[in-house]
View 1 (tube, one colour):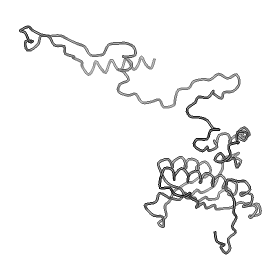
View 2 (cartoon, one colour):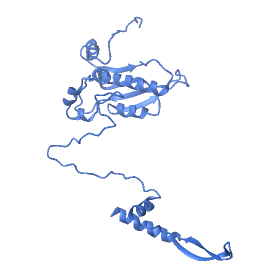
View 3 (tube, one colour):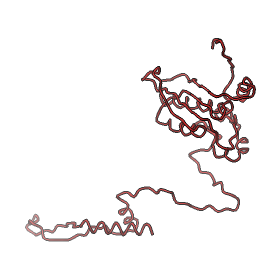
View 4 (cartoon, one colour):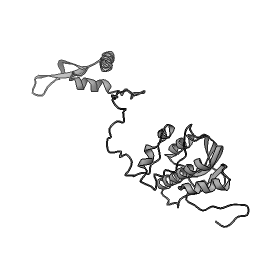
Length: 253
């Protein structure tokens, strides 16, 4: 950037702790009241990819903001809105009491860019700002073991495809306390009961269908001059409802 009158410019990496220390040193140990992030990656034209890269850049900006922003301060940053942007809102709501998205008139309507305004910076009680960077440094397993209290609840953000993190295609042992047995707890809201629940229950139990069959004389003679017979299914709506109710009661028992 070209020099601007009355503006102090610092060049550094926002993922490094040295940059945060240089900013606070400029304020003589105090913290800033406002942080503005207008950075954006090179646009590729692939909206999904651009949104993801921009979200990762914003998370890096949020990380250094926790070092330099005073409690009650404000963060204004550029984002690319998309179908998965609600995750970004949830991450920002952890540190700010009010998060809103706005699109100024100077921004083109055809652009997916917007600006997120985060007000009243209030980090969780006991949170300690850290420069653990899972996007670039893969040797951070030791730092995870040092997290305590609320810092263990706020899960560090991982880059997609990071081999040092959990693999979604594998299973891992439960992290239970020593000598404590795992106790299954049913979900708070079970799945809805589909219309075919009773039919599936009857099939698993090997029971016949609820329909009854009757035989009678055919209205017309079968080929060859002999009387034929037809099989008709006569099932009343009330009997089906009673059978399904019984099956559901058996399943709950």
